[in-house]
Length: 285
Ligand code: PLP
Image (cartoon, rainbow, N blue to C red; front, side):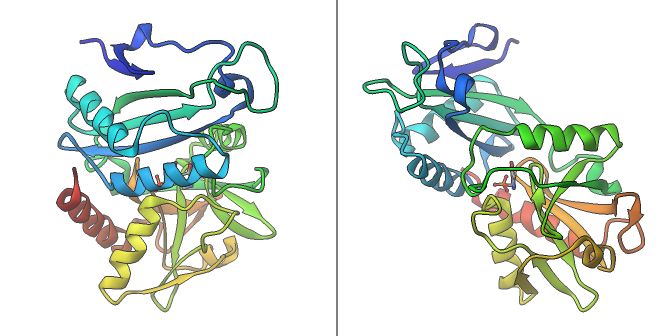
């Protein structure tokens, strides 16, 4: 069955889903995206993703072409049309296709809204059992990483370097501290059992999974500190892990070829993963 995509009001076969070469997403990366997980045909933590979408578009003064309620309806319809059980819905909104290539915002141009789905067994992913290796790279991104912009070239290069090194993620380093992963939030568990993840701010994307995991951990009286940490601290930690909509909670077992803890996924990462999956299933829409 050919997959169905959504493009500006129409559901079309993926191979026919097209936008103009003048689209500002293509020309200037003048757009915002979101990725929400799907489990058992339902959207996970979607209100959080849509709230971040609204915030991101607000920060770049891009008006959504549909209401948030309608966007969720479209996401659901796309999941249904693709008979998607487990995977992700990708959503992108750009400042539309103008008649030329002027940098300043065009007037009277309708934003482009595109969505498509992909299949992934997030809960049953083999890497959840084995853990992943990460490499470190300098964080060369712009200064507004809190905006979920489609300008992802720095992350493309970081994740390509990771792939070439046989690693599952790249941790980006600025001023000696980890900012975040190429497409995930970074965590460690210290020797005295404190869960540490960098505080939100313009240096990182406010991860929806990060937010939920921090709240779920605190509800269970686990100690959480939101602050920056270094690679030295991560290598001296009991555990390390990442969170994102496409992996949930994923243990990190080595950084730049050096073991974290005993080099196996630790009990805290496993526990937070279970807790998150339970939360995801209980709140799916
Ligand atoms: N940080 C970056 C740079 C990301 O690209 C992502 C997800 O793509 C995340 C963190 C994790 O965010 P979320 O948990 O909302 O998927």
